[in-house]
Length: 296
Image 1: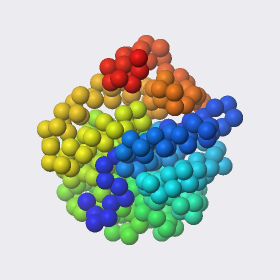
Image 2: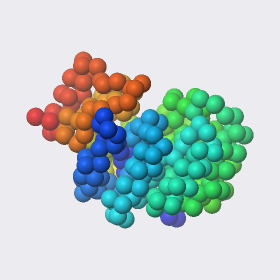
Image 3: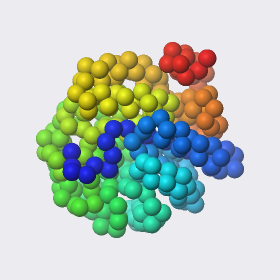
């Protein structure tokens, strides 16, 4: 809702192709190219879906640098730089800015369970150190701590804090946030099953897992909304609900990594503590992918 959003529409929270030797850059490059060709509006690198939490520091930085160079300005690159250690988040954020990332996605500090006062202090310190705009990432189901709407408002005055990825799942709380922050922060859905509801209260789009496998269709959902076709956007949201649910039938990114591997984009390689998808859940996801024309 700000005058210059980082992106409008769909940013794919991109998987990171991995193998036993580390990041598979031979797979990563074509994947970035395909996503851009399919019309996504931005790419998030080394976030939750990109397994940023189990990349080594060198790998994390290499992934950001590589994505910036491969995208070559075609879409904004948003680097996941959050950490439970604010000092490390600052260091990684500075690197991402120097490497040419267009923006940063910074998750709440997991495990430490900061107070709201601690969140304000931590994100202010990161924003002070950043040369690029920051999207605050709220996913309390994974981190153990979440932003309160009033905390967003307290952070909204910082010139480097531009948006929110909201994955708390509580629509009523998101509406309260929208009412409080107005046009001071752009709000993006962090849940694929809530894209249209969040657009309806002024959201600017979605940071999406679904768009890894259905980029053009996810973009079309947002485009329909922005064209004024609310019914058409809602119809696509409802149509994709079964496959969205299947993509979250196990913890992200386990299902989407299995799906991308089946489509030939990467290996179904995950680092512990993540393990490959259970067979019975994969069969359900696979059947839905067949219905969508993604697999034979």
